[in-house]
Length: 140
Image (cartoon, rainbow, N blue to C red; front, side, top):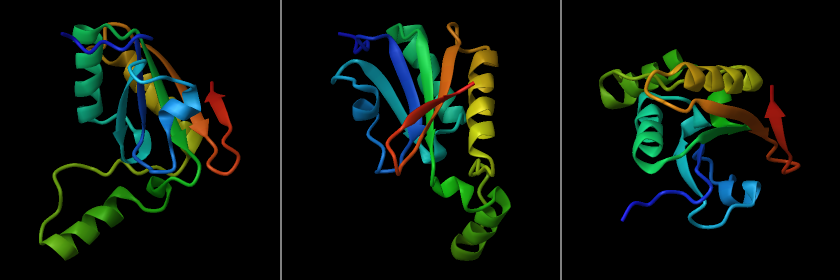
Protein backbone atom coordinates (compact mmCIF):
# COMPACT_ATOMS: atom_id res chain seq x y z
CA UNK A 1 0.00 0.00 0.00
CA UNK A 2 1.37 3.40 -0.97
CA UNK A 3 1.25 6.31 1.45
CA UNK A 4 0.10 8.93 -1.04
CA UNK A 5 -0.99 12.19 0.57
CA UNK A 6 -4.70 12.94 0.16
CA UNK A 7 -4.17 16.55 -0.96
CA UNK A 8 -1.32 15.65 -3.37
CA UNK A 9 0.78 18.17 -1.49
CA UNK A 10 4.37 18.20 -0.26
CA UNK A 11 5.63 20.77 2.24
CA UNK A 12 9.30 21.65 2.67
CA UNK A 13 9.81 23.49 5.93
CA UNK A 14 12.25 24.13 8.75
CA UNK A 15 12.88 21.66 11.55
CA UNK A 16 12.32 24.44 14.12
CA UNK A 17 10.14 23.01 16.90
CA UNK A 18 8.02 26.19 16.95
CA UNK A 19 6.59 25.31 13.52
CA UNK A 20 3.66 22.92 13.21
CA UNK A 21 3.03 22.64 9.47
CA UNK A 22 -0.23 20.75 9.89
CA UNK A 23 -1.66 23.45 12.17
CA UNK A 24 -0.27 26.31 10.06
CA UNK A 25 -1.88 24.93 6.90
CA UNK A 26 -5.01 23.39 8.46
CA UNK A 27 -4.03 19.90 7.35
CA UNK A 28 -5.20 16.59 8.70
CA UNK A 29 -3.03 13.53 9.17
CA UNK A 30 -2.39 11.99 5.77
CA UNK A 31 -3.03 15.17 3.76
CA UNK A 32 0.59 16.00 2.84
CA UNK A 33 4.18 14.88 2.90
CA UNK A 34 6.15 17.11 5.24
CA UNK A 35 9.90 17.32 4.66
CA UNK A 36 11.84 19.15 7.33
CA UNK A 37 15.43 20.29 7.51
CA UNK A 38 17.40 23.14 9.03
CA UNK A 39 16.04 26.27 7.37
CA UNK A 40 13.51 24.55 5.14
CA UNK A 41 16.00 24.93 2.29
CA UNK A 42 16.29 23.04 -0.98
CA UNK A 43 19.11 20.59 -0.31
CA UNK A 44 20.07 17.46 -2.24
CA UNK A 45 18.21 15.36 0.32
CA UNK A 46 15.09 17.53 0.07
CA UNK A 47 15.17 17.07 -3.73
CA UNK A 48 15.54 13.31 -3.22
CA UNK A 49 12.46 13.21 -0.98
CA UNK A 50 10.42 15.49 -3.23
CA UNK A 51 11.30 13.46 -6.33
CA UNK A 52 10.10 10.28 -4.60
CA UNK A 53 7.00 12.14 -3.42
CA UNK A 54 6.14 13.25 -6.96
CA UNK A 55 7.27 10.29 -9.05
CA UNK A 56 6.07 7.47 -6.81
CA UNK A 57 3.37 8.98 -4.64
CA UNK A 58 1.64 11.49 -6.89
CA UNK A 59 2.16 14.83 -5.21
CA UNK A 60 1.51 17.75 -7.52
CA UNK A 61 2.29 20.86 -5.49
CA UNK A 62 5.15 21.89 -3.21
CA UNK A 63 4.95 24.56 -0.52
CA UNK A 64 8.17 25.99 0.90
CA UNK A 65 7.71 27.49 4.36
CA UNK A 66 10.59 29.31 6.03
CA UNK A 67 10.18 31.50 9.10
CA UNK A 68 11.21 34.60 10.99
CA UNK A 69 13.81 34.11 13.67
CA UNK A 70 15.40 31.17 11.86
CA UNK A 71 18.76 30.06 13.20
CA UNK A 72 20.20 29.88 9.67
CA UNK A 73 20.07 33.68 9.61
CA UNK A 74 22.57 33.86 12.48
CA UNK A 75 25.75 32.39 10.98
CA UNK A 76 27.48 31.77 7.65
CA UNK A 77 28.39 28.48 6.02
CA UNK A 78 32.06 29.30 6.57
CA UNK A 79 31.56 30.04 10.27
CA UNK A 80 29.78 26.74 10.76
CA UNK A 81 32.41 24.80 8.80
CA UNK A 82 35.13 26.37 10.94
CA UNK A 83 33.24 25.46 14.11
CA UNK A 84 32.90 21.84 13.03
CA UNK A 85 36.56 21.71 12.08
CA UNK A 86 37.49 23.07 15.51
CA UNK A 87 35.12 20.82 17.47
CA UNK A 88 35.24 17.66 15.34
CA UNK A 89 38.63 17.78 13.66
CA UNK A 90 37.48 18.14 10.07
CA UNK A 91 35.33 20.28 7.82
CA UNK A 92 32.10 18.87 6.42
CA UNK A 93 31.82 18.02 2.74
CA UNK A 94 28.38 19.65 2.73
CA UNK A 95 27.29 23.24 3.31
CA UNK A 96 24.91 24.39 6.05
CA UNK A 97 23.02 26.48 3.44
CA UNK A 98 22.75 29.48 5.78
CA UNK A 99 21.23 32.68 4.40
CA UNK A 100 21.06 36.39 5.23
CA UNK A 101 17.81 37.41 3.51
CA UNK A 102 14.74 35.36 4.42
CA UNK A 103 12.51 36.38 1.51
CA UNK A 104 15.30 35.91 -0.99
CA UNK A 105 15.95 32.45 0.43
CA UNK A 106 12.28 31.55 -0.10
CA UNK A 107 12.32 32.91 -3.66
CA UNK A 108 15.58 31.09 -4.46
CA UNK A 109 14.21 27.85 -3.01
CA UNK A 110 11.03 28.05 -5.08
CA UNK A 111 13.04 28.86 -8.23
CA UNK A 112 15.30 25.85 -7.57
CA UNK A 113 12.29 23.56 -7.31
CA UNK A 114 10.70 24.93 -10.48
CA UNK A 115 13.95 24.44 -12.40
CA UNK A 116 14.80 21.00 -11.02
CA UNK A 117 14.87 18.36 -13.77
CA UNK A 118 13.89 15.63 -11.30
CA UNK A 119 10.55 17.17 -10.33
CA UNK A 120 7.98 16.47 -13.05
CA UNK A 121 5.37 18.80 -11.55
CA UNK A 122 7.31 21.84 -10.41
CA UNK A 123 4.26 23.74 -9.14
CA UNK A 124 5.77 25.44 -6.09
CA UNK A 125 4.90 28.36 -3.84
CA UNK A 126 6.91 30.00 -1.08
CA UNK A 127 5.86 31.40 2.26
CA UNK A 128 7.27 33.08 5.35
CA UNK A 129 5.73 32.15 8.70
CA UNK A 130 6.01 34.86 11.34
CA UNK A 131 6.86 33.15 14.63
CA UNK A 132 5.54 36.07 16.70
CA UNK A 133 2.18 36.66 14.96
CA UNK A 134 1.55 33.18 13.48
CA UNK A 135 0.91 34.90 10.14
CA UNK A 136 1.67 32.94 6.98
CA UNK A 137 2.58 35.27 4.12
CA UNK A 138 3.15 34.22 0.53
CA UNK A 139 6.38 35.43 -1.05
CA UNK A 140 5.93 36.34 -4.70
